[in-house]
Length: 275
Length: 275
Image 1: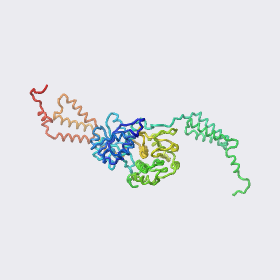
Image 2 (image 1 turned 90 degrees about the horizontal axis):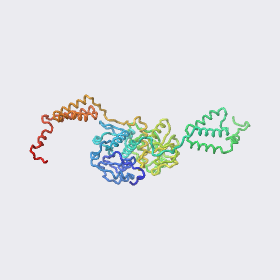
Image 3 (image 1 turned 90 degrees about the vertical axis):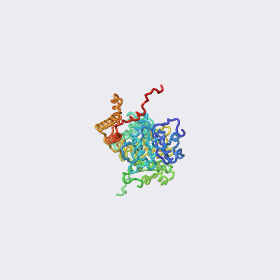
Image 4 (image 1 turned 45 degrees about the vertical axis):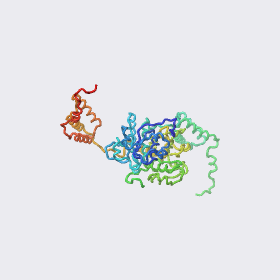
């Protein structure tokens, strides 16, 4: 089990992935890796072009050894799915027939329900260049197809397996907004803490003649408070902001900000200015 | 726009994908391909190891030329995201901080809303070996992380871009069960058509002494009708089945099925049987 973190749970269950006449060992390896990423483990190959085992597959599997080592090879698709109860065929192009066509989300949910009920389930993926034959699709129960850019629809098999494996993982989640880790929790500030910030800022600004002209002061305070309350600051953020204000407010207040430069730039009183 | 099907709509919009210090040209090409598959078009590279343009990227892009040709290179991440309004950082490992952490589904929905409102949005992906630095993550607004097998969590950047691009595509779908094509529609059968099948089957079987012994006939008819009605056959299926029954029923009825072999196998009347 090298390459896996043995302290963490290794998921290895779910539908069997069946590759029909895969050609490139690299693709088989990337399929194994994608399966391992999302907790699938059982890979079957129908008549792989370069035989099995395959060094290139092993190299591309990026230590998904439990998948590669368990891979089984079959001479025909019929044999490869003989023990299964329900099988999806993946296809990118329209097939004219009567088999139900499902989206990946619906297919994954269906597989999850059947797997949980003890059924053997699988997903068929076709050859790199031309997919599955109609006869092969006919052996499946239903079809699954991916929502892709109509003008650029070619997914390779490793990508297609990745997406189905990802949807399989998601179909087992109670809440699709769940994440493996989360931000550190912060307590929202109380209104009292927020008003403390308002008071501190407004007092510091008042001492520097920020509220000028005086008749605009109420509107300026409105705008200022709107800035400081739109985000619903946390306790910690209020504390950071009060520290910032304190630091800026540490210098002498006797000389209001800008008063010195104002004196320097004062317009000369002679009349030599252009007009 | 070679390699794309010009008769079909080419989707080219959505969030900017930003790769920070990507190393392998092949990965950049596979990223471009994944973006094109799901309708994204704008790729930016921060300080790519092997410079740009890159032949290996071009080769791996599988004709996603509109993405490769529009790719822009920046010296720093700050420059690469300067014109954007909202940016996600992707990360596989826990970051201790206060940035909100979202699932791909939630992140894609958030990007969709902001994009629709005219905001410039982007998603950051880190280096192949070690992802994004904490300083780079700090430049993003929120974090997105993938639900993976805890013991096998390493997604490569092309896979990570594929999943986010796929979720972007899905976030624009009104109905996640929608598919690009569907099975041919079939009309469900009426009860009259179903009863016609019952009558035909039961009459054909009756003439062959299938309902034997007679006291079991009601139960046998029950079982038979249950088999033929559980699936809610379509009109066409009823028609196929009636054809099958007609074909089987074409041979002489005078000799009920099995009566010849029954005669041959008839138990001898002497008492030589073991006991």
